[in-house]
Length: 186
Length: 186
DNA sequence: TCTAGCATGTAAACAGTTACATGATTGC
DNA sequence: GCAATCATGTAACTGTTTACATGCTAGA
Image (tube, rainbow over all chains, first blue to last red; front, side, top):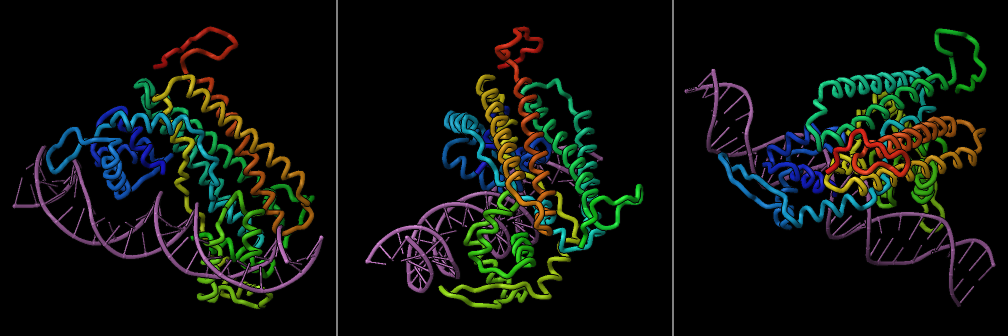
């Protein structure tokens, strides 16, 4: 139930409406904790009911601006002090890897090559993001920088891993160098 | 809906009951796609209904042994050929990092140090696993090796990142070297 | 005989996704 | 007047977790 903490965290810096928060999710938090509009509005209602946030202003079109309350800050601080649970990290991608032997070596290598490519693109995307952000506006960006660095390292690792894994799949070796030391393909 | 493909994949090698499959999930697939008993039994019933698997033997205690059908193999192969969707990777851990500025630098550093420690332990655990497994029994273990390598690289990356990130948190610097070039902590 | 392990299932609750539904306001 | 965007919400569905419920069988 971390969506609630994400919302509380965003409300620390500034008061905001559900609509504003949605935009923040789509920009700053998109890579870490994506959320849909339905979820945001639903959770905001629940948070207000529990008095962790409160409506502090109303605007046109039924706009409700929420602010974090003292109880909300306590909840957030407590959550931050809690060690993050070790996540089971379900991975669609690694699950497929597990069963790659069911297909031909060609398909398997193609799959891994595709992943390498995706990881590479993700890395490039993040590098661009890093270049685009103004790293001077303090607070959120300091931590955002840490999260971004994680993403950069992760995508670099994935690219290298996929490259390594692809070369490890048996069968017909890649175009270059035709010596197969370990060819144990089905 | 990858649970169904995980089950199909496991049934390629051998027929098994729900109980057997649960154990396989807890051992081989635990780090990639954990599943609960409820899920497994429910999904098996659905798979049988769709004739992707079939009961091929019955044993004591109402044991039902399932085998994959031709249709099931087709479904599995098709899924393997499908490019894995880019996962939004929700991370409880990185979400906390985003809001680390809400707490004191000491707490923040403590949090990151805890993560570094966890990553280190995970890395050690995987190294032990690697040493313990018999890498000769082919098929599943070939791919399992690829997945394990991913885990090893991931935990190594996380440890290095957490180390780097911890040193980047402002405020009072760590015990060693007392020069603070960039102290912008609130 | 009794315990550990085998074996299957159901129910309720929670989290997340997708689609639908509605309407107000601002700026061109 | 119209389009874009602001703004909020509901409903149905899927996937996951937790807890409950039941009973058999092999071996010590």
